[in-house]
Amino acid sequence: MIELDDIHVYYGDSYILQGVSLNVQAGEIVCLLGRNGAGKTTTMRGIMGYNPPARGRVVVDGRDIAGQPVFANVRRGLGFVPEDRRIFADLTVMENLAVAALPPRQGQTPWTEERIFEVFPLLVKLKNHKGGALSGGEQQMLSLARALMGNPRMLLLDEPCEGLAPIIVENIGAIITSLKADVAILLTEQNAHFALGIADRGYVIDKGRICYEGLARELAENEEVQQRYLAV
Ligand code: ATP
Image (cartoon, rainbow, N blue to C red):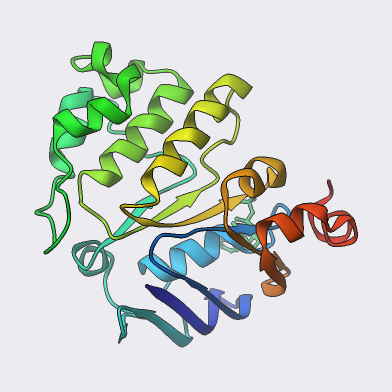
């Protein structure tokens, strides 16, 4: 589905991603774990094209998209839920959803507003509320729902549970799990417990390099890696 092959990303002169390779297959949830500042967000931004890799390939369905503009990557089937959610504060929930709608690809069950509200029942009563009036958890749900309206084949979720109450985290975890038959998911998290509870496989990033990869259940049992790289 997606393969990062040795990507290198800079912010100006700062050399941040120093050769990151990973892959996500259809039907999988894969997590990218790491401490604050390890390079998780930069990996997402590198894939999407906000900070294109200076070197390396981002292969989506056999085609290298590294360096392509963000809008082209969204049209090609990448959906992004950024850490700060980027809800349009002055638009209603319905309007936030409508602006993100893109036609489905061949073979996809399209995401309609009806289908969105089945998956996110919490948003139903908020349809006509402004985005800026929603709570953090509601905004996170809306950001996820809005990304789905683009009918993505691959979703990139950047720390979807940051700062949310445990009950909301549990709710969002169940929703993400329910999506994986439809859309491949790459998830970054500092909350290893949450991510490893829903992921099939995991990678650990430290100082811009992947330092561990394996099945989520193996990583969940690997205390040495968790203590060394995740500050658990
Ligand atoms: P967090 O959990 O804090 O989001 P992260 O693993 O996502 O951590 P990144 O945001 O990818 O980490 O940051 C990786 C490194 O890049 C950090 O050292 C950070 O200080 C640096 N960095 C991030 N954004 C910029 C920027 N706009 N300009 C310069 N350096 C940056």
